[in-house]
Image (cartoon, rainbow, N blue to C red; front, side, top):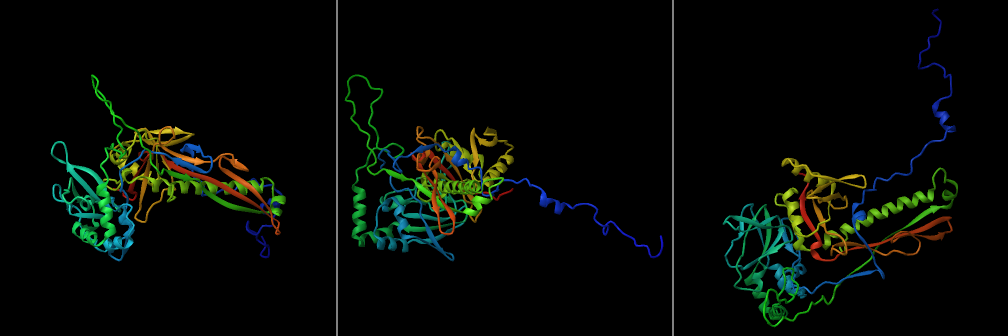
Length: 468
């Protein structure tokens, strides 16, 4: 090699063939349809039995119930000070349907805040009940005497609950159980003496209490429904009792809710860019998917008909140790007959799985549509990402009995609406505007109804961040 001969490397070698970048200009690519991360399994929509509703309204007729006042109380917090919202005192049985805001505000001002340490006894069995406790934050246990003389946990109460309300109507009431704080707890205390002082100065409250005391005591079953008088096991010719079954005079009606959007597509796009896939079809497909996701979210979280809002408070239970244990799931199952399914956030399912691992338990799985779904006691646990997770990393687990014939939870829809592409879901052409944009109105009608209270139960305040 001479001194002046040029040395070339692979990096500066002249190109000898057509490059791939230029060749792609003449090639046809293989494309996927548009993908969408928001799409989920939507097990609730798939497993809920749907009932067609004519006229857009579904009325749930029930037997007349005499039990009143079993609600949840809401508080406001300013710094370290907690106050009860005055109108929320109407959730107490003695104040149910009472609407004098000035009197309620005075009662709210008389509630004293008290901080309770873990393990501290708030109320002791057998003592006179002279205070009402409103549980603003924390968890307490109701403890009674078991059949063999040992302590037994009768229930767990958490934020928004109350106890000792019988003191407002019965001056001779005594505590039938002991209440002990399980965690650091904040309660508001309303004394019976303060309540009586307000009642003495308020004609409306005094009249309200007298009306409550004058209501005749009805014989009811354990669900609060009027007892059906029956005779059984008799002989001879005794008088057979007379009875009738009364109904609620104002049954609840569920109106179909709505989710809508207007899809806009330019005619140039619809006309020219339809190969290899139709632009209008893909736009509609993704819009319908988003609409169904919102539909499932509303069925879980809507304040009017959502599952979390419509669960009766005596069907809400608290985990005994924070994390969802097999014992908590058994307690949730025991509150109703024929539970068909659980709904839980995937992270709650993972937390339950960790509790099973600690005990050396392996849950059974079943095949549903090619998917392996975990079960507990034979009841499938479906994932539902629409169940919210709070800032404190707690969530809820829902248990349901479903079906109209089973007096369960049902979905509501109306089939046969104009321009329907699926039951109760329509795509309606709205025309073309002056900017040559095609418009489609995409609409879904839906709701859910709980036929009897024990068809739906919730395990609340489930911790999902515990790893030990």
